Amino acid sequence: MATRTERAIFLINGTQGAGKSTVARALAGRFERGVCIDADDLLRLVVSGAALLEPPLSSEAEHQLRLRARVASQLADTFFEAGFTVAIAEIVVGRLDHFRAGIKSRPLLLVNLVPSLDTVKRRNEERLNKNVFEPWSPILDRAIRETMSGIGLWLDNSNQTPEETVDGILQRAWKEGALE
Picture 1 (cartoon, one colour):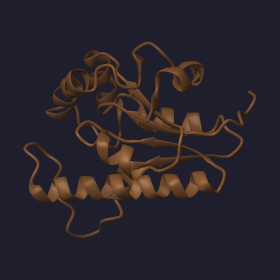
Picture 2: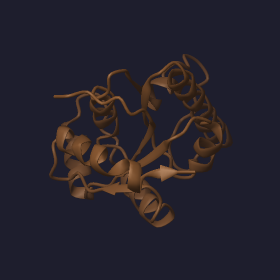
Picture 3: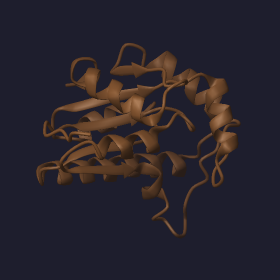
């Protein structure tokens, strides 16, 4: 498979089990120089004092999610300035403005992965290390669909392999996913 040279920062959004991490990693791998930033990894850096990310979110949890967005944005800009394409896997609902303002490099392309809830539930059940469907996935899916409608590229990847999803992103993201 040919590698691409046109650079961008991709913000891969979706609920748990939507395929963000898998797709972001595969997407970054399609570029001559690609980096995947999985925002979950950033929270795992906190070895003591991590806030519980369960509804309703505490003020400390909100603070740590904003911190995660800021760190992911700074990492993305740093790698982009060094000549890399960057794919960030993150749930951005409620924090899109933090990423828009925090990421200075352009193009910044938003990709919303929106598989069916049945698909998300099945994927979460198949995970060995993190089954987090309830209560978050239905809540986040609804929030993404209601608050982010018309923003970025929307892909229902319910019946796609990660490679097929990446193909769709590469065909459509520059036109449909660009954020200013």
